[in-house]
Image (cartoon, rainbow, N blue to C red; front, side, top):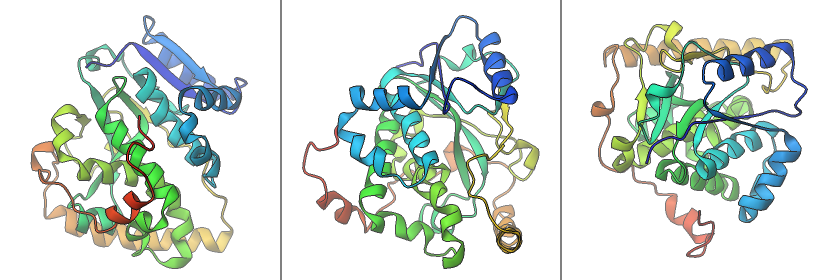
Length: 289
């Protein structure tokens, strides 16, 4: 399976602010022979109702709008195939060289997640701001299933957040339920799919200029418009905790060197003592894609 020439983007309405319009123009001009698909909120709802009615209740139950956007992007690329890009991603060249792959993701950053580091033996994450896949991609299928498990059973999510101070957990909830941490967890849980996934890894994971880049194909401006607004003291406390945590974890990461590769990832499945609990909530054949 290879990625089709299709670009998928989504926003609340077609009336986009200047930066988003510039990003849309950029991606379309660099890929003139690609089909372009834009979904506003009404079209997203119609797509879910038509293509994935079994997930309508799950989609509606996500407490944060960004979780619904995350979930939709996985479903849309799974069903249609193509590339998804956030509206703050600017490309530097065309995507045609990536069409030969079945699935493409990019490096996000060194992770702050103790769960990923200790349970999954991964000190880095892949991002969901830009990715591509063929329709019916098996990795996206597993990712969608994990998002559903996390929404239907909090115990599936609990080990991912339990080492975050309780007062800060809500600020990292999205990352661990539908965002990069869940994406990376799914990758670690399914090493049998590694050979089918192209990951755009940088030469130096400590150089933050490489963070949130779609390889050398583009850059994510990381506007963070979806982030929960915080008060002055909350921003300071969370900021201090992040700085302290990143400094401590970077020391651990430096012992592994500056380069990461798929060949260095574990090749046996990551066991989950919560898997049985989640499976009990789904009958055989339920939530099939």
